[in-house]
Image (cartoon, rainbow, N blue to C red):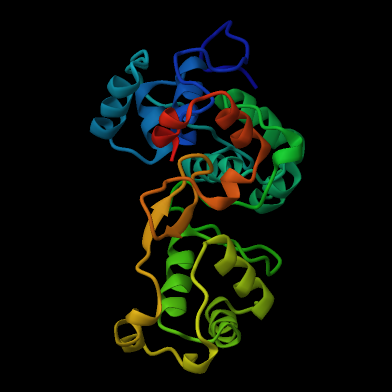
Length: 268
């Protein structure tokens, strides 16, 4: 598969975005570095032209060439939706094999497309099942595999704050998706989202939204955040923008070890 920019070989992005920048900015830098045009960059990132150019100016990146986007043809061509899903799953740090299974592609095909897009390299020992980058992408679960989107996590958080029992949440989500979701999966996801512990005496079997306001005093006031390091949603009582999951990773600890306590304010 040839690069959209003739004669340019794949390499790590070098147009001014560091590895500590938000992942969407690293994706944009990689697309530009690979020679993708303005229309393609906007389409692949789910942005309009104004949003794209605003981000490019903010990051002081080169302006992509203003040319029509190349559209593949054939039974196995990559359309915009498939490319956005690939980017989404790549940022969630799914393994290449799992991405291939989601997209009904071969692992080699996924790797080739990732190089063509200029996607950043990922450490194999850091691959996790994380969140989508683009909330608008609704990825259909394959083989009854649960894929957590932003909307689905907000759905879970709403029921959690409304004091529905996690077993009942699992039951309702199973009905919603058409396959079984275990209570353990719900409890685990709630923990990763950093949702608060609840008094078991107040838990309900049925979802009643009014309970969220009625028993708000029983829970700390929490705000939805998006982690600056991992790009996923979590709920926090403070002003932090770094999730506990990100703080536990070795790359984050290495970053913290090299900067002062004063500078850490910007990271959090």
